[in-house]
Length: 218
Image 1 (cartoon, rainbow, N blue to C red):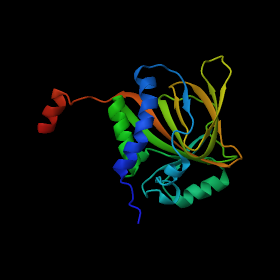
Image 2 (cartoon, rainbow, N blue to C red):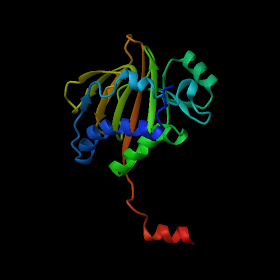
Image 3 (cartoon, helix red, strand yellow):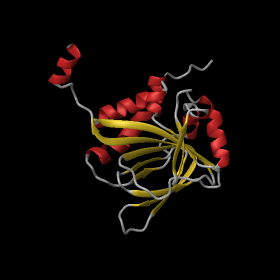
Image 4 (cartoon, rainbow, N blue to C red):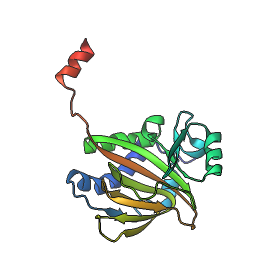
């Protein structure tokens, strides 16, 4: 019988190529788009389930998102009904704190390496789903295509022509903060699931301040 890989082993294997791609871009503040094909195999990713869809934790918030805003719920029935009424991208927010999966370990380790707060979110969509439209983000996104495919239009500069990228399973992209982009889910295969590790500007203190130590001892 095949032994199941531990969450720590999965996190370590997942983090190694991710960190080597993201660290130079973020720590050196290069502000450059980076895209790498086939960083992970589809077979390996398929064996590392995510706490989404039927495996969602009861307390996990899911936002149905489009350019009109976000509708948040924790109810699986409400998610399904809301999607039927108006098909939209499903956003699994803050997975790193709402589940005890290997994603929590990856997020913590990335934050430790970057010395910044990192937030992990999953985006699930089908072809034809509405989405956020053209926008930019206030963080640097380390993006991993877990399954399916996602079509990206990315504007590296304000008046530049867009870069067109089709992310497939196992691809990784580092999207710099403030870079405008627009996404869609292609008809083939008609679905997409990707992770975003949002590396924020909020620093992590390397050690607690004297004031914090004194307060905790009081």
